[in-house]
Amino acid sequence: MIPGIQKELADRFDIHFSNPALLDEAFTQASYVNEHPREDLKFYERIEFLGDAVLQLTVSEYIYKRYPEMPQGKLTRLRAAMVQEASFAKFALECHFDQYIRLGKGEEKEGARHRASLLCDIFESFVGALYLDKGKDAVVAFITTVIFPKLDAGWFDHAIDYKTALQEWLQRDGDVLIDYELAHEDGPENDRSFTMTVAADGTIVGQGTGKSKKSAEQAAALKALNELRGQQETLITHGKD
Amino acid sequence: MIPGIQKELADRFDIHFSNPALLDEAFTQASYVNEHPREDLKFYERIEFLGDAVLQLTVSEYIYKRYPEMPQGKLTRLRAAMVQEASFAKFALECHFDQYIRLGKGEEKEGARHRASLLCDIFESFVGALYLDKGKDAVVAFITTVIFPKLDAGWFDHAIDYKTALQEWLQRDGDVLIDYELAHEDGPENDRSFTMTVAADGTIVGQGTGKSKKSAEQAAALKALNELRGQQETLITHGKD
Image (cartoon, rainbow over all chains, first blue to last red; front, side, top):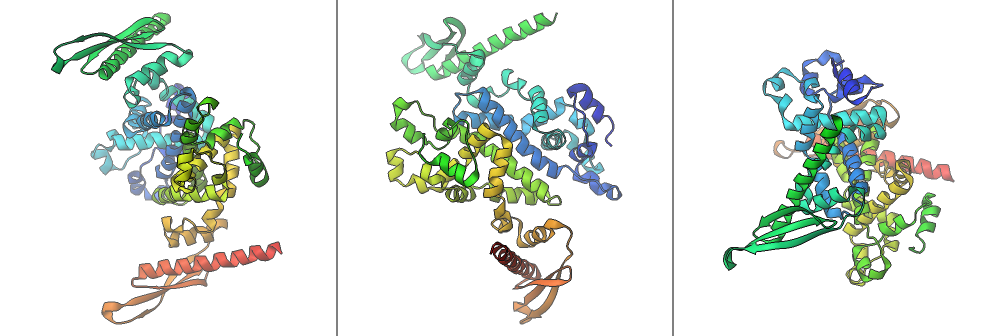
Protein backbone atom coordinates (compact mmCIF):
# COMPACT_ATOMS: atom_id res chain seq x y z
CA MET A 1 0.00 0.00 0.00
CA ILE A 2 1.29 3.49 -0.80
CA PRO A 3 1.56 5.30 2.57
CA GLY A 4 -0.58 8.37 3.14
CA ILE A 5 -2.56 8.45 -0.06
CA GLN A 6 -5.81 7.11 1.38
CA LYS A 7 -5.72 9.67 4.18
CA GLU A 8 -5.02 12.50 1.72
CA LEU A 9 -7.95 11.44 -0.49
CA ALA A 10 -10.27 11.05 2.51
CA ASP A 11 -9.29 14.38 4.09
CA ARG A 12 -9.29 16.51 0.96
CA PHE A 13 -11.90 14.91 -1.27
CA ASP A 14 -13.91 12.62 0.99
CA ILE A 15 -12.93 9.72 -1.30
CA HIS A 16 -12.67 6.26 0.29
CA PHE A 17 -11.53 3.47 -2.02
CA SER A 18 -13.17 0.08 -1.61
CA ASN A 19 -10.36 -1.58 -3.54
CA PRO A 20 -7.10 0.20 -2.67
CA ALA A 21 -5.16 -2.12 -5.01
CA LEU A 22 -6.52 0.06 -7.82
CA LEU A 23 -4.82 3.05 -6.20
CA ASP A 24 -1.51 1.20 -6.02
CA GLU A 25 -1.80 0.35 -9.70
CA ALA A 26 -2.71 3.93 -10.62
CA PHE A 27 0.33 5.42 -8.87
CA THR A 28 2.98 2.88 -9.90
CA GLN A 29 5.24 3.40 -12.91
CA ALA A 30 6.65 0.49 -14.94
CA SER A 31 10.19 1.38 -13.78
CA TYR A 32 9.19 0.59 -10.18
CA VAL A 33 7.59 -2.72 -11.16
CA ASN A 34 10.78 -3.73 -12.99
CA GLU A 35 12.82 -3.08 -9.85
CA HIS A 36 10.46 -5.19 -7.70
CA PRO A 37 9.92 -8.30 -9.81
CA ARG A 38 8.86 -10.49 -6.89
CA GLU A 39 5.98 -8.32 -5.72
CA ASP A 40 3.62 -9.07 -8.64
CA LEU A 41 2.82 -5.37 -9.11
CA LYS A 42 0.85 -3.67 -11.86
CA PHE A 43 1.78 -0.35 -13.42
CA TYR A 44 -0.57 2.47 -14.33
CA GLU A 45 -0.70 2.35 -18.12
CA ARG A 46 -3.83 0.28 -18.68
CA ILE A 47 -5.80 2.18 -16.09
CA GLU A 48 -4.58 5.46 -17.58
CA PHE A 49 -5.94 4.32 -20.96
CA LEU A 50 -9.36 4.09 -19.34
CA GLY A 51 -9.02 7.29 -17.27
CA ASP A 52 -8.19 9.31 -20.37
CA ALA A 53 -11.54 8.33 -21.95
CA VAL A 54 -13.41 8.94 -18.68
CA LEU A 55 -12.02 12.49 -18.50
CA GLN A 56 -12.83 13.15 -22.16
CA LEU A 57 -16.46 12.23 -21.59
CA THR A 58 -17.02 13.92 -18.24
CA VAL A 59 -15.42 17.17 -19.44
CA SER A 60 -17.34 17.01 -22.74
CA GLU A 61 -20.66 16.42 -21.01
CA TYR A 62 -20.08 19.24 -18.56
CA ILE A 63 -19.26 21.90 -21.15
CA TYR A 64 -21.96 20.59 -23.53
CA LYS A 65 -24.59 21.18 -20.85
CA ARG A 66 -23.14 24.30 -19.32
CA TYR A 67 -22.82 26.16 -22.64
CA PRO A 68 -26.01 25.23 -24.49
CA GLU A 69 -25.40 27.76 -27.26
CA MET A 70 -21.69 27.15 -27.82
CA PRO A 71 -20.99 25.82 -31.32
CA GLN A 72 -19.04 22.60 -31.80
CA GLY A 73 -15.81 24.30 -32.89
CA LYS A 74 -15.56 26.26 -29.65
CA LEU A 75 -16.57 23.26 -27.54
CA THR A 76 -13.78 21.28 -29.20
CA ARG A 77 -11.17 24.01 -28.59
CA LEU A 78 -12.29 24.45 -24.99
CA ARG A 79 -12.16 20.70 -24.31
CA ALA A 80 -8.70 20.49 -25.89
CA ALA A 81 -7.45 23.22 -23.52
CA MET A 82 -8.98 21.51 -20.51
CA VAL A 83 -7.78 17.97 -21.17
CA GLN A 84 -4.26 18.81 -22.33
CA GLU A 85 -1.11 17.56 -20.62
CA ALA A 86 -0.19 20.91 -19.07
CA SER A 87 -3.63 21.26 -17.45
CA PHE A 88 -3.72 17.73 -16.05
CA ALA A 89 -0.15 18.09 -14.75
CA LYS A 90 -1.20 21.20 -12.80
CA PHE A 91 -4.26 19.43 -11.38
CA ALA A 92 -2.06 16.49 -10.32
CA LEU A 93 0.25 18.85 -8.41
CA GLU A 94 -2.70 20.62 -6.81
CA CYS A 95 -3.93 17.23 -5.56
CA HIS A 96 -0.39 16.41 -4.26
CA PHE A 97 -0.35 13.32 -6.47
CA ASP A 98 3.38 13.83 -7.15
CA GLN A 99 4.12 12.75 -3.57
CA TYR A 100 2.62 9.29 -4.03
CA ILE A 101 4.06 8.10 -7.35
CA ARG A 102 6.18 4.94 -7.14
CA LEU A 103 9.18 5.28 -9.47
CA GLY A 104 12.30 3.26 -10.23
CA LYS A 105 15.58 4.73 -8.94
CA GLY A 106 16.80 5.76 -12.39
CA GLU A 107 13.59 7.60 -13.22
CA GLU A 108 13.64 9.27 -9.81
CA LYS A 109 17.19 10.53 -10.39
CA GLU A 110 16.25 11.94 -13.77
CA GLY A 111 13.47 13.99 -12.15
CA ALA A 112 10.53 12.07 -13.64
CA ARG A 113 8.44 12.89 -10.58
CA HIS A 114 8.21 16.53 -11.68
CA ARG A 115 7.78 15.85 -15.41
CA ALA A 116 4.49 17.14 -16.86
CA SER A 117 3.95 14.02 -18.97
CA LEU A 118 4.14 11.70 -15.95
CA LEU A 119 1.98 13.98 -13.77
CA CYS A 120 -0.61 14.07 -16.54
CA ASP A 121 -0.54 10.26 -16.84
CA ILE A 122 -1.01 9.88 -13.09
CA PHE A 123 -3.94 12.29 -13.05
CA GLU A 124 -5.60 10.20 -15.76
CA SER A 125 -4.80 6.88 -14.08
CA PHE A 126 -6.18 8.13 -10.76
CA VAL A 127 -9.42 9.07 -12.50
CA GLY A 128 -9.47 5.64 -14.16
CA ALA A 129 -9.10 3.97 -10.75
CA LEU A 130 -11.80 6.18 -9.23
CA TYR A 131 -14.15 5.32 -12.11
CA LEU A 132 -13.58 1.58 -11.66
CA ASP A 133 -13.96 1.76 -7.88
CA LYS A 134 -16.78 4.27 -7.46
CA GLY A 135 -18.32 4.94 -10.87
CA LYS A 136 -18.94 8.01 -12.97
CA ASP A 137 -20.74 10.11 -10.35
CA ALA A 138 -17.68 9.99 -8.08
CA VAL A 139 -15.51 11.16 -10.98
CA VAL A 140 -17.89 14.02 -11.69
CA ALA A 141 -17.81 15.03 -8.00
CA PHE A 142 -13.99 14.93 -8.00
CA ILE A 143 -13.52 17.02 -11.14
CA THR A 144 -16.25 19.40 -10.03
CA THR A 145 -13.82 20.27 -7.23
CA VAL A 146 -10.59 20.11 -9.21
CA ILE A 147 -11.25 21.10 -12.84
CA PHE A 148 -14.52 22.96 -13.32
CA PRO A 149 -13.79 25.94 -11.00
CA LYS A 150 -10.88 26.75 -13.34
CA LEU A 151 -13.38 27.59 -16.06
CA ASP A 152 -14.75 30.46 -13.97
CA ALA A 153 -11.23 31.44 -12.98
CA GLY A 154 -10.40 32.01 -16.64
CA TRP A 155 -7.77 29.29 -17.15
CA PHE A 156 -9.17 28.34 -20.55
CA ASP A 157 -10.41 31.70 -21.88
CA HIS A 158 -7.71 31.79 -24.54
CA ALA A 159 -9.16 28.64 -26.09
CA ILE A 160 -12.47 30.27 -26.97
CA ASP A 161 -11.42 33.97 -27.17
CA TYR A 162 -12.19 36.60 -24.54
CA LYS A 163 -15.47 37.83 -26.06
CA THR A 164 -16.91 34.33 -25.86
CA ALA A 165 -15.47 33.86 -22.36
CA LEU A 166 -17.08 37.12 -21.18
CA GLN A 167 -20.40 36.16 -22.72
CA GLU A 168 -20.37 32.73 -21.06
CA TRP A 169 -19.36 34.27 -17.73
CA LEU A 170 -22.03 36.99 -17.78
CA GLN A 171 -24.76 34.63 -18.94
CA ARG A 172 -24.17 31.89 -16.38
CA ASP A 173 -27.41 32.72 -14.59
CA GLY A 174 -29.51 33.95 -17.48
CA ASP A 175 -29.64 36.34 -20.42
CA VAL A 176 -27.59 39.52 -20.29
CA LEU A 177 -27.50 42.03 -23.15
CA ILE A 178 -23.88 42.56 -24.18
CA ASP A 179 -23.01 45.49 -26.38
CA TYR A 180 -19.68 46.61 -27.89
CA GLU A 181 -19.35 50.25 -28.97
CA LEU A 182 -16.63 52.35 -30.53
CA ALA A 183 -15.60 54.98 -27.95
CA HIS A 184 -13.02 56.75 -30.09
CA GLU A 185 -10.46 56.39 -32.90
CA ASP A 186 -7.03 57.96 -32.67
CA GLY A 187 -3.85 58.48 -34.66
CA PRO A 188 -3.12 59.13 -38.36
CA GLU A 189 -4.79 57.17 -41.19
CA ASN A 190 -1.87 54.71 -41.55
CA ASP A 191 -1.47 54.07 -37.81
CA ARG A 192 -4.97 54.18 -36.45
CA SER A 193 -5.95 52.81 -33.06
CA PHE A 194 -9.45 52.02 -31.83
CA THR A 195 -10.97 52.09 -28.36
CA MET A 196 -14.06 50.00 -27.72
CA THR A 197 -16.28 49.72 -24.65
CA VAL A 198 -18.30 46.71 -23.64
CA ALA A 199 -21.54 47.09 -21.71
CA ALA A 200 -23.63 44.50 -19.87
CA ASP A 201 -27.32 45.42 -19.67
CA GLY A 202 -26.38 49.05 -20.34
CA THR A 203 -23.55 49.36 -17.79
CA ILE A 204 -20.02 49.69 -19.16
CA VAL A 205 -17.93 46.86 -17.71
CA GLY A 206 -14.73 47.18 -19.73
CA GLN A 207 -12.78 49.25 -22.25
CA GLY A 208 -9.88 48.26 -24.51
CA THR A 209 -7.67 49.64 -27.27
CA GLY A 210 -6.21 47.92 -30.33
CA LYS A 211 -5.03 48.33 -33.90
CA SER A 212 -8.36 47.02 -35.17
CA LYS A 213 -11.91 47.15 -33.82
CA LYS A 214 -11.76 43.38 -33.39
CA SER A 215 -8.63 43.42 -31.24
CA ALA A 216 -10.01 46.38 -29.25
CA GLU A 217 -13.14 44.32 -28.50
CA GLN A 218 -10.98 41.42 -27.32
CA ALA A 219 -9.00 43.80 -25.08
CA ALA A 220 -12.25 45.27 -23.66
CA ALA A 221 -13.62 41.80 -22.97
CA LEU A 222 -10.42 40.72 -21.19
CA LYS A 223 -10.47 43.91 -19.09
CA ALA A 224 -14.10 43.28 -18.15
CA LEU A 225 -13.40 39.63 -17.27
CA ASN A 226 -10.52 40.56 -14.98
CA GLU A 227 -12.55 43.35 -13.41
CA LEU A 228 -15.69 41.30 -12.83
CA ARG A 229 -13.82 38.24 -11.56
CA GLY A 230 -11.84 40.49 -9.21
CA GLN A 231 -15.08 41.89 -7.81
CA GLN A 232 -16.45 38.42 -7.34
CA GLU A 233 -13.32 37.30 -5.50
CA THR A 234 -13.59 40.35 -3.23
CA LEU A 235 -17.20 39.46 -2.55
CA ILE A 236 -16.26 35.87 -1.76
CA THR A 237 -13.39 36.94 0.51
CA HIS A 238 -15.62 39.50 2.21
CA GLY A 239 -18.36 36.92 2.66
CA LYS A 240 -15.92 34.61 4.44
CA ASP A 241 -14.84 37.24 7.05
CA MET B 1 -40.22 14.62 -37.11
CA ILE B 2 -38.12 12.50 -39.48
CA PRO B 3 -40.47 9.85 -40.93
CA GLY B 4 -39.75 6.20 -40.16
CA ILE B 5 -36.76 6.52 -37.90
CA GLN B 6 -38.59 5.81 -34.67
CA LYS B 7 -40.12 2.68 -36.11
CA GLU B 8 -36.75 1.50 -37.42
CA LEU B 9 -35.12 2.01 -34.02
CA ALA B 10 -37.99 0.31 -32.21
CA ASP B 11 -38.13 -2.68 -34.58
CA ARG B 12 -34.42 -3.31 -34.91
CA PHE B 13 -32.99 -2.19 -31.56
CA ASP B 14 -35.97 -1.91 -29.22
CA ILE B 15 -35.03 1.74 -28.70
CA HIS B 16 -37.87 4.17 -27.91
CA PHE B 17 -36.89 7.83 -27.56
CA SER B 18 -38.61 9.86 -24.86
CA ASN B 19 -37.53 13.08 -26.53
CA PRO B 20 -37.64 12.57 -30.30
CA ALA B 21 -36.44 16.17 -30.85
CA LEU B 22 -32.99 14.83 -30.00
CA LEU B 23 -33.28 12.41 -32.92
CA ASP B 24 -34.23 15.21 -35.29
CA GLU B 25 -31.20 17.17 -34.14
CA ALA B 26 -28.90 14.15 -34.50
CA PHE B 27 -29.93 13.47 -38.09
CA THR B 28 -30.02 17.03 -39.42
CA GLN B 29 -27.09 18.62 -41.22
CA ALA B 30 -26.41 22.37 -41.13
CA SER B 31 -27.15 22.63 -44.87
CA TYR B 32 -30.75 21.55 -44.21
CA VAL B 33 -31.16 24.05 -41.38
CA ASN B 34 -29.92 26.84 -43.65
CA GLU B 35 -32.57 25.96 -46.24
CA HIS B 36 -35.37 25.97 -43.62
CA PRO B 37 -34.65 29.16 -41.66
CA ARG B 38 -38.19 29.49 -40.29
CA GLU B 39 -38.37 26.09 -38.63
CA ASP B 40 -35.97 26.84 -35.77
CA LEU B 41 -34.05 23.59 -36.33
CA LYS B 42 -30.85 22.41 -34.74
CA PHE B 43 -28.09 20.56 -36.59
CA TYR B 44 -26.11 17.59 -35.34
CA GLU B 45 -22.68 19.04 -34.59
CA ARG B 46 -22.97 19.73 -30.86
CA ILE B 47 -24.58 16.39 -30.17
CA GLU B 48 -21.90 14.68 -32.27
CA PHE B 49 -19.24 16.35 -30.09
CA LEU B 50 -20.79 14.57 -27.12
CA GLY B 51 -21.40 11.26 -28.93
CA ASP B 52 -17.75 11.06 -29.96
CA ALA B 53 -16.68 11.10 -26.30
CA VAL B 54 -19.41 8.63 -25.31
CA LEU B 55 -18.17 6.15 -27.92
CA GLN B 56 -14.54 6.63 -26.86
CA LEU B 57 -15.38 5.74 -23.29
CA THR B 58 -17.79 2.85 -23.93
CA VAL B 59 -15.41 1.20 -26.41
CA SER B 60 -12.42 1.81 -24.09
CA GLU B 61 -14.20 0.33 -21.10
CA TYR B 62 -15.32 -2.71 -23.05
CA ILE B 63 -11.89 -3.66 -24.39
CA TYR B 64 -10.21 -2.75 -21.07
CA LYS B 65 -12.41 -5.29 -19.29
CA ARG B 66 -12.57 -7.91 -22.01
CA TYR B 67 -8.78 -8.10 -22.48
CA PRO B 68 -7.45 -7.91 -18.91
CA GLU B 69 -3.89 -8.72 -19.99
CA MET B 70 -3.65 -6.53 -23.08
CA PRO B 71 -1.00 -3.84 -22.69
CA GLN B 72 -1.86 -0.18 -23.22
CA GLY B 73 -0.20 0.08 -26.63
CA LYS B 74 -2.39 -2.64 -28.10
CA LEU B 75 -5.52 -1.33 -26.38
CA THR B 76 -4.82 2.05 -27.94
CA ARG B 77 -4.32 0.59 -31.43
CA LEU B 78 -7.44 -1.55 -31.12
CA ARG B 79 -9.56 1.39 -29.97
CA ALA B 80 -8.23 3.52 -32.81
CA ALA B 81 -9.30 0.86 -35.33
CA MET B 82 -12.74 0.56 -33.74
CA VAL B 83 -13.57 4.25 -33.45
CA GLN B 84 -12.21 5.38 -36.80
CA GLU B 85 -14.29 7.07 -39.49
CA ALA B 86 -14.36 4.05 -41.82
CA SER B 87 -15.69 1.78 -39.04
CA PHE B 88 -18.38 4.18 -37.85
CA ALA B 89 -19.47 4.83 -41.45
CA LYS B 90 -20.00 1.08 -41.95
CA PHE B 91 -21.97 0.82 -38.70
CA ALA B 92 -24.15 3.77 -39.78
CA LEU B 93 -24.97 2.01 -43.06
CA GLU B 94 -25.70 -1.24 -41.27
CA CYS B 95 -28.20 0.65 -39.08
CA HIS B 96 -29.73 2.26 -42.23
CA PHE B 97 -28.96 5.69 -40.77
CA ASP B 98 -28.16 7.01 -44.27
CA GLN B 99 -31.90 6.89 -45.08
CA TYR B 100 -32.83 9.36 -42.37
CA ILE B 101 -30.28 12.17 -42.74
CA ARG B 102 -31.77 15.58 -43.53
CA LEU B 103 -29.53 17.37 -46.04
CA GLY B 104 -29.67 20.58 -48.03
CA LYS B 105 -30.29 20.21 -51.77
CA GLY B 106 -26.73 21.11 -52.74
CA GLU B 107 -25.20 18.57 -50.39
CA GLU B 108 -27.67 15.93 -51.60
CA LYS B 109 -26.66 16.54 -55.22
CA GLU B 110 -22.99 16.21 -54.34
CA GLY B 111 -23.61 12.79 -52.81
CA ALA B 112 -22.99 13.75 -49.17
CA ARG B 113 -25.45 11.10 -48.02
CA HIS B 114 -22.98 8.36 -49.00
CA ARG B 115 -19.84 10.15 -47.79
CA ALA B 116 -17.96 8.27 -45.03
CA SER B 117 -17.26 11.46 -43.05
CA LEU B 118 -20.96 12.35 -42.83
CA LEU B 119 -22.03 8.77 -42.03
CA CYS B 120 -19.44 8.68 -39.26
CA ASP B 121 -20.68 12.01 -37.87
CA ILE B 122 -24.27 10.75 -37.88
CA PHE B 123 -23.33 7.54 -36.09
CA GLU B 124 -21.65 9.64 -33.39
CA SER B 125 -24.52 12.12 -33.14
CA PHE B 126 -27.05 9.29 -32.86
CA VAL B 127 -25.06 7.83 -29.96
CA GLY B 128 -24.91 11.31 -28.38
CA ALA B 129 -28.69 11.59 -28.63
CA LEU B 130 -29.19 8.10 -27.21
CA TYR B 131 -26.89 8.94 -24.30
CA LEU B 132 -28.80 12.14 -23.52
CA ASP B 133 -32.19 10.45 -23.81
CA LYS B 134 -31.56 7.05 -22.19
CA GLY B 135 -28.13 7.13 -20.52
CA LYS B 136 -24.97 5.09 -20.79
CA ASP B 137 -26.51 1.63 -20.32
CA ALA B 138 -28.67 2.12 -23.41
CA VAL B 139 -25.57 3.10 -25.38
CA VAL B 140 -23.74 -0.01 -24.17
CA ALA B 141 -26.72 -2.18 -25.18
CA PHE B 142 -26.79 -0.57 -28.64
CA ILE B 143 -23.09 -0.96 -29.36
CA THR B 144 -23.12 -4.47 -27.91
CA THR B 145 -25.36 -5.25 -30.88
CA VAL B 146 -23.64 -3.09 -33.49
CA ILE B 147 -19.91 -2.84 -32.70
CA PHE B 148 -18.70 -5.54 -30.33
CA PRO B 149 -19.62 -8.60 -32.43
CA LYS B 150 -17.19 -7.24 -35.05
CA LEU B 151 -14.34 -7.96 -32.65
CA ASP B 152 -15.08 -11.69 -32.79
CA ALA B 153 -15.64 -11.47 -36.52
CA GLY B 154 -12.06 -10.24 -36.92
CA TRP B 155 -12.71 -6.72 -38.26
CA PHE B 156 -9.96 -5.23 -36.11
CA ASP B 157 -7.38 -8.04 -36.01
CA HIS B 158 -4.93 -6.03 -38.13
CA ALA B 159 -4.78 -3.39 -35.38
CA ILE B 160 -3.29 -5.77 -32.83
CA ASP B 161 -1.64 -8.35 -35.16
CA TYR B 162 -2.97 -11.84 -35.84
CA LYS B 163 -1.01 -13.59 -33.07
CA THR B 164 -2.58 -11.35 -30.45
CA ALA B 165 -5.99 -11.68 -32.10
CA LEU B 166 -5.73 -15.49 -32.03
CA GLN B 167 -4.64 -15.43 -28.40
CA GLU B 168 -7.55 -13.19 -27.38
CA TRP B 169 -9.96 -15.33 -29.36
CA LEU B 170 -8.77 -18.65 -27.92
CA GLN B 171 -8.59 -17.35 -24.37
CA ARG B 172 -12.04 -15.78 -24.24
CA ASP B 173 -13.27 -18.44 -21.85
CA GLY B 174 -10.06 -19.25 -19.95
CA ASP B 175 -6.41 -20.16 -20.35
CA VAL B 176 -5.30 -22.04 -23.42
CA LEU B 177 -1.68 -23.02 -24.04
CA ILE B 178 -0.61 -21.63 -27.41
CA ASP B 179 2.56 -22.90 -29.02
CA TYR B 180 4.31 -21.93 -32.27
CA GLU B 181 6.76 -24.42 -33.79
CA LEU B 182 8.95 -24.49 -36.86
CA ALA B 183 7.64 -27.28 -39.17
CA HIS B 184 10.26 -26.89 -41.91
CA GLU B 185 12.60 -24.50 -43.72
CA ASP B 186 12.96 -24.48 -47.49
CA GLY B 187 14.91 -22.90 -50.32
CA PRO B 188 18.51 -21.72 -50.70
CA GLU B 189 20.35 -19.69 -48.04
CA ASN B 190 19.61 -16.33 -49.74
CA ASP B 191 15.93 -17.07 -50.39
CA ARG B 192 14.83 -19.06 -47.40
CA SER B 193 11.21 -19.59 -46.44
CA PHE B 194 9.85 -20.83 -43.11
CA THR B 195 6.74 -22.81 -42.25
CA MET B 196 5.38 -22.55 -38.71
CA THR B 197 2.52 -24.38 -37.03
CA VAL B 198 0.44 -23.04 -34.17
CA ALA B 199 -1.10 -25.39 -31.61
CA ALA B 200 -3.78 -24.77 -28.99
CA ASP B 201 -3.52 -27.09 -25.99
CA GLY B 202 -1.46 -29.49 -28.10
CA THR B 203 -3.73 -29.57 -31.18
CA ILE B 204 -2.42 -27.93 -34.34
CA VAL B 205 -4.95 -25.27 -35.40
CA GLY B 206 -3.04 -23.51 -38.17
CA GLN B 207 0.05 -23.47 -40.38
CA GLY B 208 1.66 -20.64 -42.32
CA THR B 209 4.67 -19.84 -44.48
CA GLY B 210 6.74 -16.67 -44.72
CA LYS B 211 10.13 -15.18 -45.50
CA SER B 212 10.86 -14.96 -41.75
CA LYS B 213 9.77 -16.99 -38.76
CA LYS B 214 7.83 -13.96 -37.53
CA SER B 215 5.81 -13.56 -40.72
CA ALA B 216 5.24 -17.33 -40.84
CA GLU B 217 3.78 -17.15 -37.30
CA GLN B 218 1.48 -14.33 -38.35
CA ALA B 219 0.33 -16.35 -41.37
CA ALA B 220 -0.27 -19.40 -39.17
CA ALA B 221 -2.28 -17.32 -36.68
CA LEU B 222 -4.43 -15.82 -39.46
CA LYS B 223 -5.05 -19.28 -40.92
CA ALA B 224 -6.07 -20.58 -37.48
CA LEU B 225 -8.38 -17.60 -36.90
CA ASN B 226 -10.16 -18.08 -40.21
CA GLU B 227 -10.43 -21.82 -39.61
CA LEU B 228 -11.73 -21.57 -36.04
CA ARG B 229 -14.14 -18.73 -36.79
CA GLY B 230 -15.43 -20.71 -39.79
CA GLN B 231 -16.09 -23.70 -37.54
CA GLN B 232 -17.87 -21.49 -35.02
CA GLU B 233 -20.07 -19.97 -37.73
CA THR B 234 -20.96 -23.47 -38.95
CA LEU B 235 -21.85 -24.41 -35.38
CA ILE B 236 -23.99 -21.28 -34.99
CA THR B 237 -25.74 -21.88 -38.32
CA HIS B 238 -26.28 -25.50 -37.45
CA GLY B 239 -27.60 -24.57 -34.01
CA LYS B 240 -30.20 -22.29 -35.60
CA ASP B 241 -31.60 -24.99 -37.90
